[in-house]
Length: 206
Image (cartoon, rainbow, N blue to C red; front, side, top):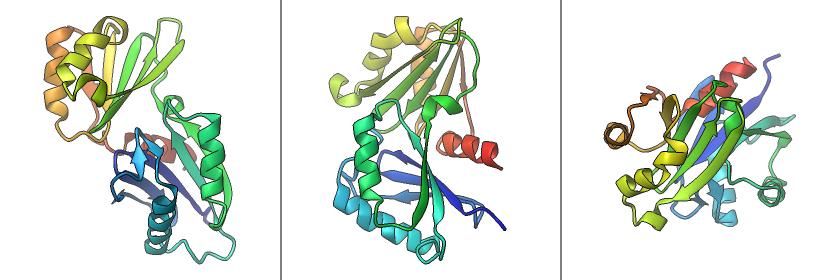
C-alpha cells in the first residue's frame, strides 16, 4: 500500500506542498498576512485555507488520515511547534514530522545557503568544520534595499567557498549580480529554487 503523506513548506504567501498520492509538487497562494518570515501569522485564516487545500488534494476524507512533514525555517522555535500542533489538531493528520531547513542542505565545508524570498532571507552557513550558523533577516530592516543587506552580511556570510541560492524570489539573476560585485566566490542557484527544499526531502523519502 502506498504511504500517504504530504510535505509542506511556507515561503512568503505561498504554501509549497508535495502529495505522495498524486506525486506532484504544487505551490498554493495563501491570503496575505497568513504567514510572515516563513511562519504562520494568522491562525484562523490558515486553517480555512489549509482545509481548502486538503479538499483540492483529495486528502480531507482519507479514512486513516495521512502523515505531514513540515520543513521548518531557522526562526522556528519550540513555541511555534506547540502553536502549529494546536492549529492542526482538528485535521485528519496521523503524524506530524518536523524537518529543519538546514538538514536538507548539502553537507559541504565552507559554504553558504541563501534562501531568498520577497520579504525576508534565511541564511545558513557551514564553516570549515561543518559547524552550522543560521539567521533570518526581514528586508524591513534595510528598507528593502537588498544591495545594502548583502553589503552588511558580506564579511560574515558571503566569504565562503561557494554560495548556494534558493527561494521564492523571482529576480534571482539580479541577486547574483549584486553578490558577484561583492565577492569572487562561486555563486550557484538551482533551476528548482522555489521547490528545492520540498524536492530534497521528497527524494530522501522515496
